[in-house]
Length: 153
Image (tube, rainbow, N blue to C red):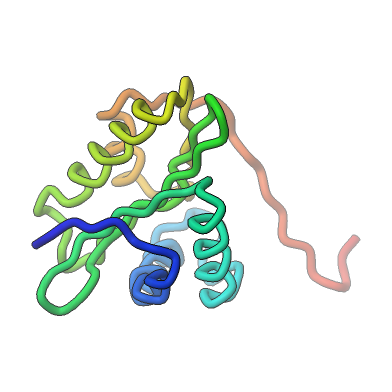
């Protein structure tokens, strides 16, 4: 296992992790199962590339012999940080990789001068909530969603 920083031209290597994350969200989502990914993965990867190029984001990944098994993407805008993505493929969980990426993210936030950091989780993702709470995150707000079909107003 190695950790590596992802460069803009390497974001395509994260596609399988994003697919795994969407599948996981569809399994655990309390109210929006089947909704993920809400944006095509190729579009998300292009946004990652742009953010890395503009130096507003950083991505660290964990790589095993068969490829990337997890990654964390953070955004920093002045004193405001955002933990945007953290995924470990299911078959690699329980090895401390989530904590390894969280430690990287928290160090990066401090080094870049972030004063507060936000993270959003899918309602029903208790494992993610437990991990973030171990790092001192607490509930700040609830975001309510409603998906409208064309025949509703």
